[in-house]
Length: 288
Image (cartoon, rainbow, N blue to C red; front, side, top):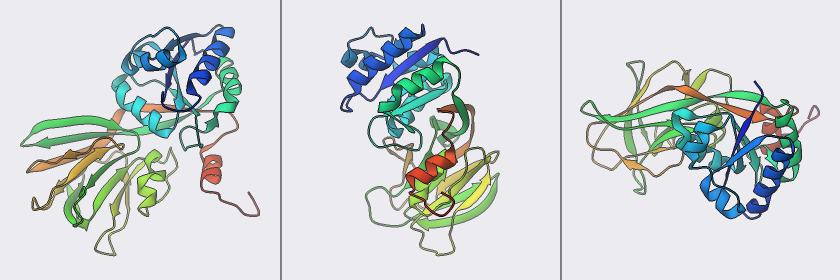
């Protein structure tokens, strides 16, 4: 289906983003595509405002994000169940999600206008925090859910179950449950594996485990992962996609499963997940 309405959302504190937003809007309009602009983006670009991120997500066919990977994570969080396909144009260094430099904005606009964008389907996590059967928090994550010790330099104990069966008790600084998209973020820094976007799995990665045999565990994305603190002696926190951490109450349980909604992430025709990996991780060799 041809894209008719473009939603434009920018990281307004990025240098040069106001001019880029105006240039992108002009290019879309020259190709007779309607552009609706998020409130803060409209303010810096001196354009007509069309609403909040959530409102833009409701009304658009495709969201163009000007910023970095963190900007896309924020848009995914704000859009929630109204999430639409996203194409990221990077303002700064290239990321894993925003793979096109701002200097190539005309190429991006042309590819969108002519229907040459390719899409990668990205699974999201549904993260639910509850206690005594009462739901305290229910959110989606594109990258990961992190259960950690916070600022206190002590190990915490976390009990993990997969589909109701005990996995193990982790004695570590924390635990990361990541999607394939999130496998190249915090989980990778903690020693986790890189997962291709369509692999159909999640990864459970401990952060600095005390037991050397505690390593990343890959599970099907149809699994239900349950995490609960093994002790209330020290504070434990939950952070989803890098958002403000929430302190876990007594008898807290975290249930993580694949969300019903998914993200279609746009790429230019000549860009692939593996080409991005080669660039970002600086892989070289006789065949690269």
